[in-house]
Amino acid sequence: MQKQIILVTGAGTGIGKLGAQSLAEAGHVVYASMRDIAGRNAGRAAELRSLAAAKNIQLYPLELDVLSQDSADAAAATIVREQGHLDVVMQNAGHLVVGPTEAFTPEEIVKVFDTNVLGAQRVNRAVLPYLRRQESGLILWISSTTTKGGFPPFMGPYGAAKAAMDSLAVTLAYEIARFGIETSIVVPGAFTRGTDHFPSAGKPADAATAAAYSRYDGVMDQIGERLSALTPDNADPQAVADEIVRIVGLPAGTRPMRSLIDFVGDGATEVFEVSERVRIEFAKRIGMGDLLEAKVRRQEAKKLRGS
Image 1 (cartoon, rainbow, N blue to C red):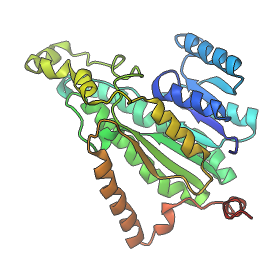
Image 2 (image 1 turned 120 degrees about the vertical axis):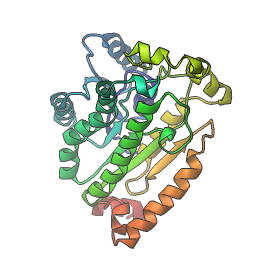
Image 3 (image 1 turned 180 degrees about the horizontal axis):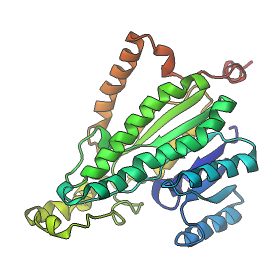
């Protein structure tokens, strides 16, 4: 395995935290970013430092607020200054909201998109100049089966934001391929245990409108419970972290465009099989088949051939 320099966004909890820790334990240099590491996330940052010391791994908390371009720029600059380069960016930062779509004001939905979509774009603008200059790297996105599979009601703004983020990832993949930058999209299904996803979900501020949907209380209040009932006992978000480690560890030029980890079986696997086939076929029909794969540098190609 070749040691990689990795930035993980949203690494304070959930898949971000599991992914950052697992990547560091696999021997990589990992910057586990989150906002306000000197304030509200000081405890989480201290926990990561203690873990790094106890396990003798290279896991560094890093200040990065995806709502701020200056913060994203500073984080990327810090990594390159300390390590000389950056190999992998794991786009994980996001926030779940649950409630009647009508009850969310447009301004609240803008905030959901700001974190889940525009936050990723700020990070892109911070890191891509470095990756383009070195003509190598991997952007690894954490998507969701909500983008293609069946998902329950009352997750409208979140589902829309995740779909937008996934679309951005696919489009960007074409645009950075000729720079030798790879794209992998990891697609977790619903995990109701092992993360703070549902317990920390946001709710609409318009309580009156939300209350008007009282006839749905049995559905709205039991989304997590109903998903849990479909989830087998062996469903562990560590499986997502393990897949992230596997993908990062693959040689450049061999990483999959998309990988699904779905224990619930919400249909996303079947839909993605069709959509990926259509995407590939259409790119070839319009004469842009070369954009389906990153242009691996000559020295990387020699490694792959065993030269």
